[in-house]
Image (cartoon, rainbow, N blue to C red; front, side, top):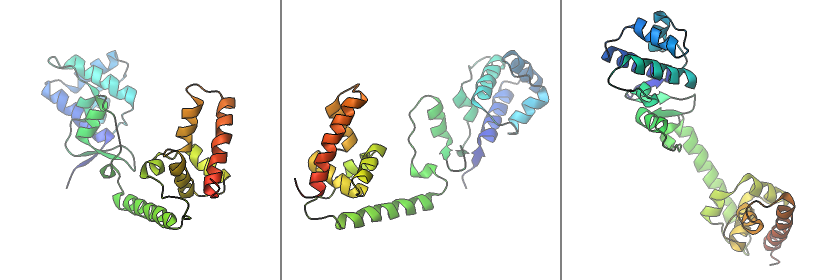
Length: 222
């Protein structure tokens, strides 16, 4: 079974391994910690290493700095404080492979994948139910509307859903009309026509024009 660490446990175990590898004492780390603003005793360092201190970002930065002072051959970075095998629990929903967490701390971008979620089965069911609902709604579209493109459905933003409600239609119907008209969402088309840095008045004028076009397509009057 894969080990699952809390953030506190992972950071503490890694800090302890770094300290022991440098043949440093708890007292030496405590002295270095005081120099970087952590008023820790050797007992407090031991608490951190045992995972009994919640590691805020400022604390982690200070700990990395303190450890760099006692480790002569290496400068310690935040990824080094999560040098464990297994997975690290970020919160009650999100759990990352330790290597992905280290990459994130090195500055890589982060995108959630299904395996990161603690309740994969529930999420899969929600995705299935949502996809089935969309599929069923597509089957009910009137003949003058094509099925919406997957790209348009994926890109729907809050502004698109708000516009759909103002037209008294569901988002699938609105997406079908957007696909037929522009093959892009209303928000994307509005911003394209209004141009970069457009003020609220200009966006309002474009919105009214596009809303009228959408209504005509939805009503079959295009």
